[in-house]
Length: 307
Image (cartoon, rainbow, N blue to C red; front, side):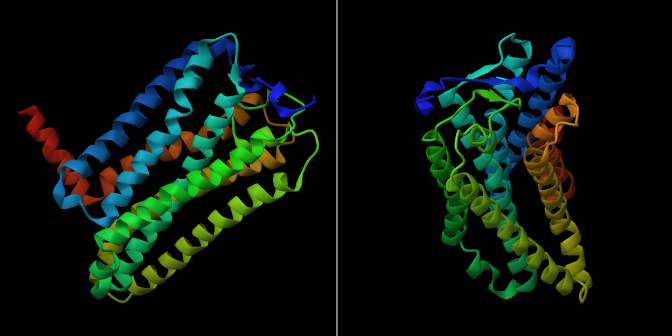
């Protein structure tokens, strides 16, 4: 191959083992995607429509749900089409776009969880300065940074990937991610190692900050019963979301880098999609059930609708 532009279409080989149960898989996937859209849209509309929820914690949660819709939209429609199709291919440009959206969504998820941890840290550990620290201007700036940094960072990474000289067009997954595209590079370069290493290190620092924040939050809450109640009501959902996201991302990273081929194709596919399944599906349910303000608002809306 003389240059990367000769690769015009990628083949997604992860679909090879689903032919015998593709209709069942299509039905389950369609239902899951509909539920994901419904629960996330419900939380988004609840927060937007209720002015009493226009606080930093709920604004960050709203953006977390928007990010879930952003990431899953890049995967599920294409995946549903491919399930019923006999040709599992994606264009070169389409693969890069899908990789950009899925990867930036994963990074933005970590960013918003870090912002939510920061918000709870200030609210519980420094309550007297909370409103001055988390003022509307700073909140908007933090939300903007949580969106623009992952998208900008991944846009640069994908641009570098688009310049690579590739010696293959077979992607051993059911969707495109940047790391798998880079594995097709003819001659490994320094950017192949440096770029993902920088991204992982950058967002691992986010994770360390979240751990640091919750350490001091729990330390503060142990001294006061009222603060312990606040921790149970608002921080446990955040911790649950964080654990779900970190476990899913960790399994996906380990699978991509250390896959020895011993796992069945079905197991590999499941590990590949768990980040696009569990956090977007479970997180809105956790917040909708555990956060009293949101739960009460949804319940009152449902009661009004039933009258």
